[in-house]
Each structure stands twice: as C-alpha cells, then as structure tokens.
Image (cartoon, rainbow over all chains, first blue to last red; front, side, top):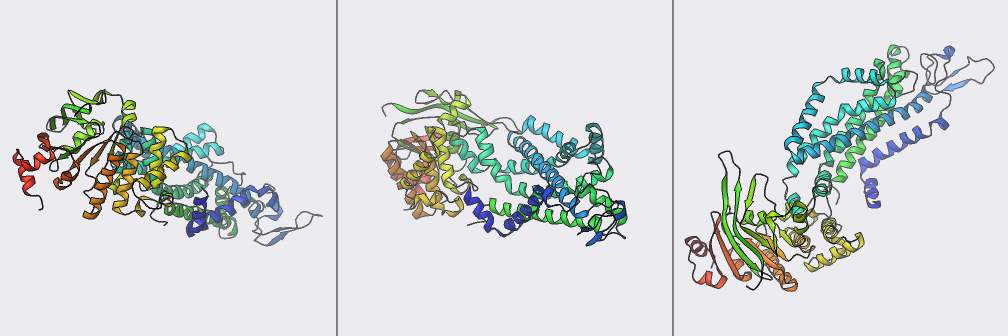
Length: 287
Length: 261
C-alpha cells in the first residue's frame, strides 16, 4: 500500500490532483475555524460590497474586511465559499462513490452472466435513460422533501448508468480473455473471477468517468438548488451561491465568479487525480 | 499401465448451433496411468483442446460434453457439482495454456497470481503463500524470484511468462498436468527449454502429463504414447516408437511425412 502512495506522489497529474483536493478538503474541514465572519449573518447595509472592502455599517463595532466582497444580502462571500466547500464536496464525492459502486456492480454482473440478468439490467438502463432527469429529480425531491441526502441520492441515480454501460462492455470483452479462463482452470470461484480478475481490469475507464461525474455532480447540485428543489437557499453551497449572483453579474461580478473559480479549481483537482489514477492503474504505464 | 489415473470412454462434445447441434468431438476414449506422459496430436480444430477442457468443465457455454465414463482417480468428472469441480481444477488437474501473454492477468503482479492458487487450494497465509510462490518461481528456473514476484506480466519475456504459467499450474501440486500447446507461441530455442522444464518437473513430482500439440518432433522426445486425433475422433493410438516406425492411419503418415528431417 505504501508503494502505491509513493507512486501516486511520483505521478505528476496525480500529485497535482491530490494536492488540490487536500487543500480543498482541509478548507472544508477547518471551515468553522478559518472563516472570517459568520456565513449566515445578513447585513443589509453592507450588501454588494466589492472584494477587499470594509463594512462599517454596524455602529460601534470594528469594521469587517470582506476579502471577496459580499453578496446581495450582505453575507461575506469568502466565508460562504469556505462553508460551501463542505456541501459541494460531500454531495459530489458521495454521489460519485454511490453511483460508481452501484453502476459498476450492475455492469459487472450483467456483462458476466448475460441472459436474464443482462436483460433486466438493460431494461433498467433503458428506463433510466428514457426518463427525463429533471422531471425525475423534481418529482423525487418533492416527494423526499429535499435536503442533502436526497440530493445525493438523485445525483447517484442520474449517473450510475454511465458506469454500468462501461463496465458491462469491458466485462464482455474481458471475460473471454485467456487469464479469465486460466483463473477458472486454477479452481477460482465466480466471486474471485469477478472481483479479482475482471473488475480491476475495468478500473481505468471507471476512474475517468468518476472524475467527470463528480464534476458533473457538483454542477448539477447547483442546478437543482437554482430550481428550488435542491438545498435550502440559505445553505451555503457553491451551487446556490452561483445562482444567487446571476442577477448581479454585471454590477457585482464577484458573487458568482468566486464560487465559479472554486468549482473550477476543485474539478481540476478531481480530473487530474482521475487522470493520474488511470495511469497508475495501468501497470504498463509505470515501470 | 497398471492403475489408471484417468480413464475416458466415449467422450463427445456437442455445440448447439443455429443449424442444430454439431458434434465436434466424438467417441474419444483413452487411459492414462499415474506418472505417464501421453501426447495428443492433431491439426487445428481436431478437438484436442476441447476434449481436454471438457474434462474440467471449462467448455464454452454453447458446448456440452457427454461420456460413458470420464473417471479421474475414482471420480466421475462430468457428473461433479461446480464446487467439487473447482476443488479439482488447479489442485489435481492443472492446465498450462498456449498463449502465456493472455493467460496472465495484466493488472495483477505475477506473485499475486501464483499466491492466489496456493491460497485457494492450501489455505496458506499470505506470508506462506509468498514463500511458496518464490520457491515455485525458482523451481521453474526464473532468476531472482523474490524481485520477479512483484513484477507484472508485461515485464517478462514470452518464455519467462510461460514459465510463470507453469509455476501457477504447479502451485496446486497437481497429479495431472495438461499442457495445451505450451510451446506454440515461443521461438524454437525457448520451446526446447520449456519442454525440458516440464519433463524435469514431471520426473521430480511423478505427475502425469498430457501434451496437446501439433508438433510430432516434440512428442518424440517426451511422450510414451501418442494419440492422434483427426476430425474429432482418435484415429490412432500407439507407443511413440511404434507410431514413428509404422504409422497406420493416413493422417499420421502425412504428419510424419511433413516432419522436418
């Protein structure tokens, strides 16, 4: 395992990606300590302040420095950004892991066994693909009553198909490889063949899909919040902030630009790490 | 030919096809004594490999095997349950495949793949399995086994990879080794090395070996008896000297005629 970490550090894209994610994760974890002001505190007098300005609204108190400015109701953008990373990372990461697990498992099983299992999975995939995602999201979030867990569930539901299809296609070609036959010939059972011999060979494309879909999950969460079916608007998340700032793009550009940069930075980290992992998982790539 | 280790009688393999079932192996019968080396020759598609795979239940899904008797050490191979069969595969009957490049999993280290067999059949701990894998690699003549264990298949040459697959086959300490054209994809000098390696291993362990090949020259060196297969049936069976001296079947004669002097 330590050898794996050593290789991870030596691989440039993986190193870059991990560094970015470590920084973002650290900020998310340490947000309560790091924030300059209360991210929920509304200051109507200090609304739409540009970056690096001080609010002097509250009489008698020390003026607060707003490094990244304030939003339309006078909340500190930097503080909200820091707290927002918690929601965005949790949602993006959990949704990605859930859908990757579910989708890969289904793809693996359907590709390997074929027959009725494959027919059922294919049917499930078709249903999922033919159902408009937004409609499903609005319906389910309405029924489940919103909240972080519900949003995660919806996002996982939206992306598992990608994994299922890729893993299924890979499994179909891998199950006829010599080493799978050889594994059978040494007395390996079905579970061992599936999880030791086939699954690891499908991981490289899964990594790429995972990095894309985590980025997509962060953005979709933003979209859902915008529609009013996602998270509570007062919850600081990068998505809700992005949408908050839309009306002020010309007059107060920082409100949506800052969360945009944060999303971009995080997505860059995820993608780099995905790319690095793909390289690392191919033994021919790292001598 | 005292007690038979493997006794096959009336083995046939049938494929379900679009135009009805098609029998590709028909009425194959042979006996194999413990410690004996038997060669199976025949052209591509004559059913050599299929007959061997059918004994271990490794046929493709569309194929079905039937036999009057397929008795390995008192057990009827074709009527075993899947778990019983898995306990025999790799442990009592092991196979070395033709293409060593595809027979090894590219994303697992060589050590892991050998250890897996040891752990599966002998319930060894990781450390014991590692030690055993190292021994096995040394046994098949791979230098620096401790280092080589941690490497991936692509870091091995063709001949070395075939040695690894042989080590994997030996890991279960089988009583019967089926060598399914193990030298076909190798160049001639390496072929000779692999052949003598398997011969040595056979002598050390006393296992039986079935050589599936289409190279009569190889069989002349290693087999005691030869079965000649043609179009899914055994057309000739003879001790190797007799086969070379007086081939009876026309196919055998043409095989011998085409042998390089």
